[in-house]
Image 1 (tube, rainbow, N blue to C red):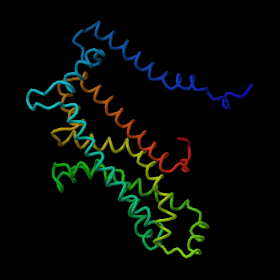
Image 2: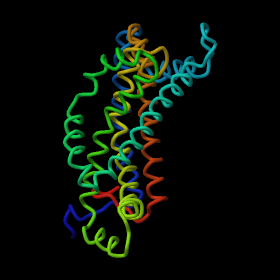
Image 3: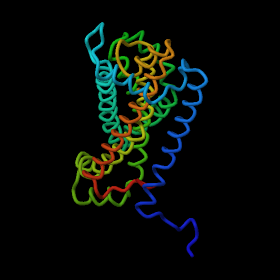
Image 4: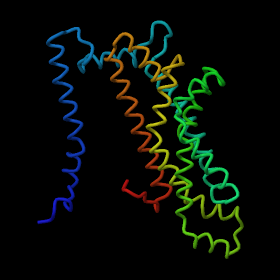
Length: 272
């Protein structure tokens, strides 16, 4: 009989094991909610599923009386626009500076600078961003950029260091100049690593976005959560949190799917 560490679940068991913890959490919430509501029907801490579905219906499929908008979708669009802009800018900057790390004359001054910047808590400079850039969209996008770009650059720098020296020497022996080595040898190695890094950066990016929206915004998922908290509207807050989680999960799947499609030869360490 194989050892427990060598036993792998089949597809049906694997699916069941994946769903089991989520089912347990849902059941625990259901029982806790029913118990609290039975004791106090006006309790707002753990709303029932019917109360949350009514809140979703009100926020997503009923026009707001004041603005005439569908708040759920408007908030989602605003947050995704900010998040997408921040991720795109971060990816572009990280890729350019990651490529630059191959050149010693650029790596020597850039590497310590990026390391120091990566140690700065991004939320600590949020007031500075609001003062310098105002309360508009730019400061919110820049918080995401400042928060995740240094980490992405350091990850790409590590990938550059992992490229076998023999590969670079062979390319130069065949007549490739520095630009050709960067584009034909290094760039294909960095692109899948960048997509992998973006997957890992999604969590912090959402955190920075929600923090910025909560402090200074008039729309967005983070803004809405912190707006309704003053009314203890958990029937709105919990669906919004679940929606953010679902959006983040879908983005993670899309990035990993794009990585597998565009770079089928790339297999990140530590599994999928």
